[in-house]
Amino acid sequence: MHTPVLLQPALDALNIRKGGLYIDATFGQGGYSREILKRGGRVLAIDYDGSQARWLNKSDKMILVVDNFSRIESLAKSYGFFPADGVVADLGLSMDQLAGNGRGFSYKNDQDPLDMRINKSSEVSGCDIINSYSQEKLYEVFSKNSEEVNSRSVADAVVVSRRIKKIETVGDLKKIIDGVVGREDARTKARIFQALRIEVNQEFANLKLFLEGAVGVLKKEGRLVVVTFHSLEDRIVKSFARNRGFKETGKKNFGFQKRSRFERSAMLRVISKI
Image (cartoon, rainbow, N blue to C red; front, side):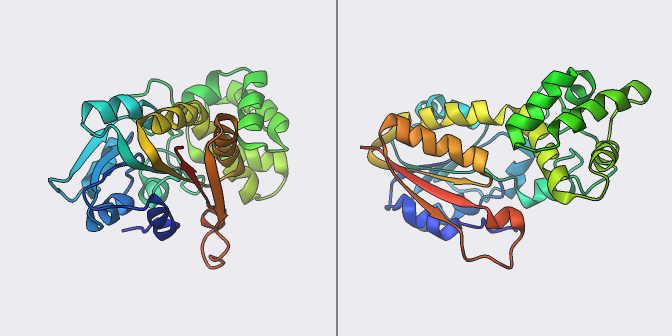
């Protein structure tokens, strides 16, 4: 079972008290929820991916809801977690999701379909987007969601390639990217796949709704703790705190040289409700 990379700093920042009400907005494999329970808190856990429920250890002090964290305020009120003492959200995918669940989240699994839906009930998949968006719209998705310098060329190549054969698998999209770059380039592939996943799941729009809702459910002096894994997510959180005038501190993860590049990029931000 995977331990979140900034688990202890995030839990310390929550300042958990016995009997307090806490919302784990991205349950994943349950790392945060289990530790909050150990420290005496009650937990409302939210995860948009229903398959993550198998990681749940049943407790009468915890509720797990399969829903989008953008609806946190409504969910908190419905389940009696309003107002809450703290909210935590870890925006990284779980290791189980990345390792090979057949949805194409990772560019390393060539045979996976280009699905990329975190929740299977969502109507639009990565395959739908890559085969139907215009060249200009694909360019916008790749550039805005990843800031990849090859976004224009990749979008052009996708449109040319799909005229010959529908792009259906991770391997299909990888071949197009490799053809554009002219070599194996893990960073470009990671950025393009990230950009597509963000578009499929409307991650930036939902993050903004979540931040508004999370602050809305907090008690005075309650804390919102957010762990991000790339600069675009972190920029949204930082801008939200600054524009709303909340007290905010940032900690970067400097101490994990032996971890993956993805984990080394983790940033923890704490927003206190004044």
